[in-house]
Image (cartoon, rainbow, N blue to C red; front, top):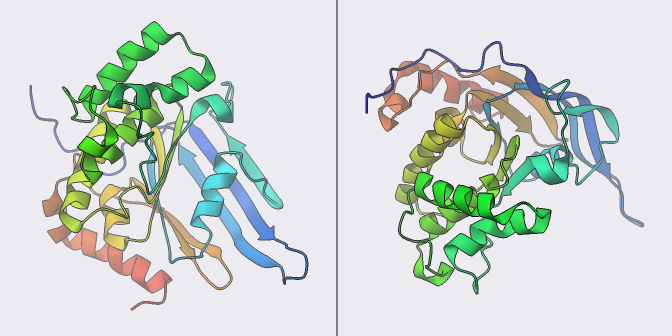
Length: 268
């Protein structure tokens, strides 16, 4: 196989929008408690096929943004448009989710865990089973189809979770700190794996993280949320070549992007 040649900058320029958020705000209200502004002033346009890193401190509204994108919460204000214009988009069918914990069913083998969304959605199981096996191979778990979750490492379990999020062929994948519970070495390996999977599948991904370096390393674009009160501080393209290797972290441009985010978060 010929190694892919580096491409300059985000590979999604000119693609149609998958997500458009304009002036989006969300406030939580509980009886007897002061109103809590979860997120405000969110503006971003995410092109089809982009991998957007959503970075910020704890409590800044990152997960709230994901819930709005997944149609689990309504925004109080602003415009929320999900799906390529002119194409059908159903959140229950066209969104895949990956969480910080793999959340695998311990009594189901790897193949059956991956197939779970297809079963819930009532998809044709013969085709779903073929796709599940392909995805298991794609995430590097060929031969592990019959293993139970307890037989897998944390990184391997997250690979299963990624395969599960793709089995119903969603148009949008939302990832809420999926590598946050992993050790540093495994986390770096999973970053490389995620980029490989994204470059092969070309799904639109929104990836939530606390790690500034992870946000820059993974993202074709980066959205920065600040705390107190939560708001979107910036949204910009990351003009670093693909495919990315760990050595890119030594590039001065990589350092400039991380410094930009540190400034936005008041961490200079």
